[in-house]
Length: 263
Image (cartoon, rainbow, N blue to C red; front, side):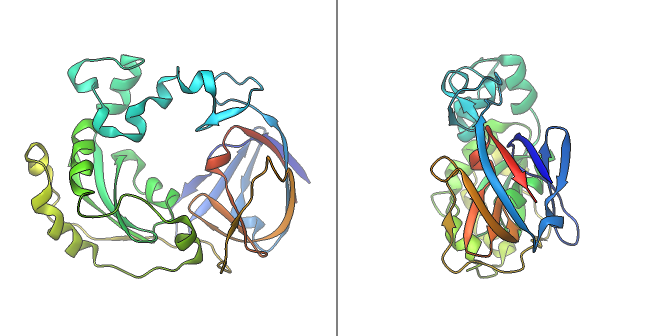
């Protein structure tokens, strides 16, 4: 059976074991059901997630012109501290920016390869943590807009990391951390504008990924350089597919590629 569609990040459901789903246009695949099966992935063409034209993907699933035009790729996406909708100042599309930036946001600590600080909209908890491959996470601040979350993250990353080591995460080379203790340690570094939003009493969220076998030396599959790949799927973590030969494929990093998946 072959399924074809443009790659978008896998949708997830936080159950006893995280469930992963791929939207392949007219088909909807539960990726967990492919574990222990041999699958083939083939590159077919490009399709920009914004204009839907067959143009090379530049970043985040967009062609170059869309990346610099669509409000879905504004600088404030990656740098929340640049958000200006709370001031009524437009970046690319104020209505869109208000719809995203002026929603409750969470500043959190997550442990995927190490403890890191991050920002996400409240409605994206725990999806954001799943996408990062975090096995444990905790909310530390809940603020009414993206700007406050951004300046809090900037302040805290002076004292804690803000990046995930994807190889370490995929190897499951991790240690449990006391995130409540981390939260208390970082409390004093929260900017004055956000101090009132500190979350005093909550507990860690623990996440269980569907992995049969972790790779020792993960090697990343580049579908543009290797347009046809076949392997046995042995795990899913973050937005990565893990194969028995230690090849790993980052679905999110390949958004905008039309692929054929044969089972």
